[in-house]
Amino acid sequence: MSDLKATPDSPDSLGTHGARRRTALSCMAWAGAGVLWTLSGGVPGSTLLGAAQAAQTDSRAFSFVQISDSHIGFSKDPNLDPASTLQEAIGKIQTMPARPAFMIHTGDISHLSKPGEFDTATQIIGTAGLDVHYVPGEHDVLVDNGGSYFERFAKPRDTKWYSFDQGGVHFIGLVNVIDLHGGGLGFLGDEQLAWLQQDLKSRSSSTPIVVFAHIPLWSLYPAWGWATDDSSRALALMKRFGSVTVLNGHVHQVAQKVEGEISFYTALSTAFPQPAPGTAAGPGPMKVPADTLRTLLGVRAVNYVPGNSELALLDTRLAV
Amino acid sequence: MNTPMKRRIPGVLALLTCAVLLASGPCVYATDAASTTVVIDNFAFNPPKLSIKAGTTVRWENHDDMPHLVISDKTPREFASKPLDSGDSFSQTFTKPGTYSYFCSMHPRMTGVVIVK
Figure (spheres, chains in turn yellow, brown):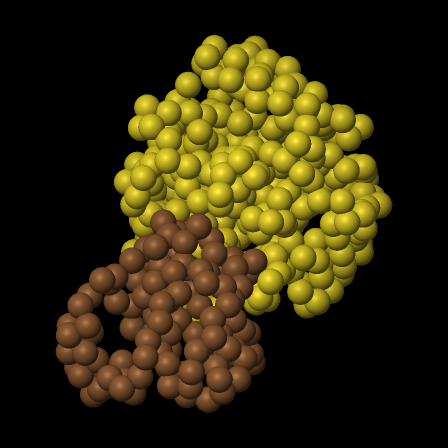
């Protein structure tokens, strides 16, 4: 994976696959359904998700949901009230055909790390009735080097970064928004990487791995800070595993890349969209019309079926 | 030093605010010093490179629709703003000649330098 950072993606290299995906998504948006992504042998493909297929699950299978970039406290064009769109996102989760086992939030819960913003977010997210595993975004660690975030969101047994197991899948939550260096990108640091090495050491290579962190762990668009300085060191530790899925936020849009056995995905925001890499002067909020906003926000369900060594991703938009 | 202030507060008001702040800390709005402004917009400091005379006050104004910070590169930090939301500003008076590099700790690709002569 060491070549990953050496060959950063240009916007174009999001590629024909991404273009096809966007086309599929827009079609599905029109049809009022979703796209089911399956990962098999490192090559993703897409099929339509129908009610029958959604219900067709192995009894040992489970799903979880990813939400991201809720930015509670933001109040500008194109979204004066991200609390309401977060509530709508939770509504989508509540009506999913299969109840998710848990939720992950890939950061930027708040806009300015204010206690009231965290309170509002957790109150709304709590209405899903799911266990939630958080990782911070850079907007969540503005106070006390993240101290107030970790006091609130870290679970008693966990350090800043943590792992847990569910149904045979090993989940790892990483922190890449602390101690950032001038001129740099997202950053994991030696201490976290040493922990990761230890954490993975005892796992068999057939264990499916799901890694989640706020800033992309791949070079999506470094010019806009959409990459992590030392992610190649983390990815090298995962190279021996047969199935690795990396879930990130930060960029407020769905992007993806497959590198060997590692599949990378970024998620939609529940607050506002950001432009595709390089298509605007900067990565700030896209000022889309009010009637378009909800078609660019959403939640993600990830389905795992034991024995298939497949993870299926389903992105659902708040409106079609 | 890092009291966020709304944009375009008239100088008199700024001085009044300054007088109030004297009770709690040193004042950056020295009347006999020149001042200059760095605008934060579109995830960039403008101008990114600034040359000033010792004693000049630099004021960073966030015109962007996302929050940013102004953090010195040195450890320990020579200066550090609080999070600057849209419309907030941060001022720092540079009294000693030298090169002061800084960045936004939320978006570290955003960098700037103040050269004090």
